[in-house]
Image 1 (cartoon, rainbow, N blue to C red):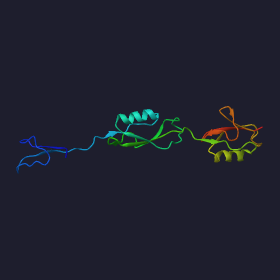
Image 2: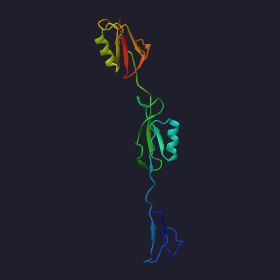
Image 3: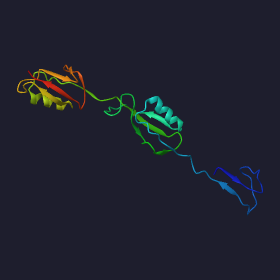
Image 4: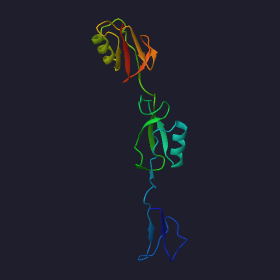
Length: 165
């Protein structure tokens, strides 16, 4: 109950008594006004916190996550999702993107095509092109025109070019 009204006695305070049969009107709250969670995906952290504060919600940063779709440093996930209704000061958890996961190039120089493909596949790397005599052994590995060395970071899920003599 938020308040009450007794028309015949407007100055009543809590604990006052009224005559039996007096009409008392009671005002009851419907609860706090809910607000929609904004879409935070793709926003930087400062903008995320401003957007949440604008609708009186609180941000909670979770661990950063790898994302092949969201650039480094931008919100990659949120919970609850956009549009969900929450009370004032509700907590919206979010994670920032670490960008595309990088994996080290395995030691495939000198391997046969089959062995190189297996090692690359185990690392989450594919083969885009094969040049030279693939019955020989791998002489070089390139990605986007750059020759790679063992251990160089390669975007997980990408495909490299194998060069044979």
